[in-house]
Image (cartoon, rainbow, N blue to C red; front, side, top):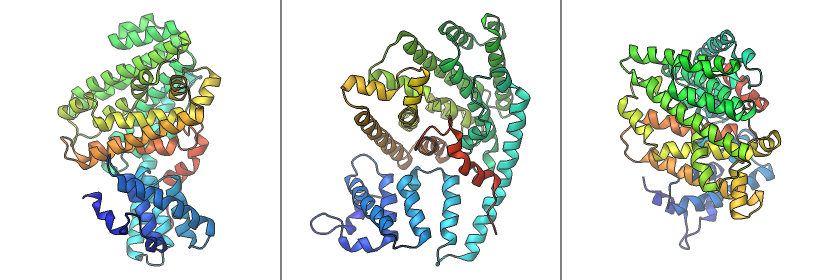
Length: 428
């Protein structure tokens, strides 16, 4: 559908009609629609500039129903299109429950469905917590973050439907390995140890473990076990290539981590254009997408893995969003801890601007990346919709987790979301 349909809301001078200001729900809908824009759709950019101040003034006047005001407040913080579907569903049920025009049968069905899926998610989370404890990796690597619940939230954000249970289980397990690797490379290992581990991973055989320090041996063996599990799953489905493609993505990730460690070790601040391609890889979203395909037997075959390997526009865009939003909220703390320069420092140095200006420009890059994602989701493609949704939802979870701070490093920011999604059923 062409964005020209929005011209009916404009007057003869090309400005949005003042008469629509009184339609609060209409203004909210127009605001939400503006985030589904693609490159060249200026009218939707104009719609955002028109609707946002109106919604902000409506909140300030406190003249609209409480549930609608809360709906607007949430939309201004994070619009529906950029929100995590499961989180948005829970919030919308609350808003709909307060709406006088609600359909009681539809509301009850929505609550029953939400609670039914929540029970499944609780079972999966319990299984993963047991797996994590049995691995004893937090005890063997005490310097690393212990965030299995938050990692499951991330996996659930990619695909929450019951038939994608294997996807969520495998993504959570691999996310735990990504987190352990990130913390090892960032905060604990020497440059010599980082090189040894990266080289051992490249060779990929049990004999490579002999050249590693003891704590890295535990990490390497955990990788071997997880990839063996992946290989077994793929072989049963006639998709033995799943483990190969996932391992190749992980090699790319560790190379990117090593590059960042080398930059820090050398005291080198790269140009923004040099930093971003490596940073997109270190977002880990290439690995996460490849792992997601393990749990999508009906949708992801050899062709889809080759498609992902070519780094299509939607994949690169989700990686850029993940990397840059993470940098914006975490770069100050990372610099205090001792980490390589982030995109903010690189942009500031290269263009000679303030930190505030750098953040402003980086957010524009994220906005362009969202338009890339929207374009890829709207036009004909060689892969199925669920494949695209995985990459779309990686962008969405980045927007949520990195909205105000790094909610993975500081998990208290996600506490309310975790409770509402996995612990508290909806009241019938």
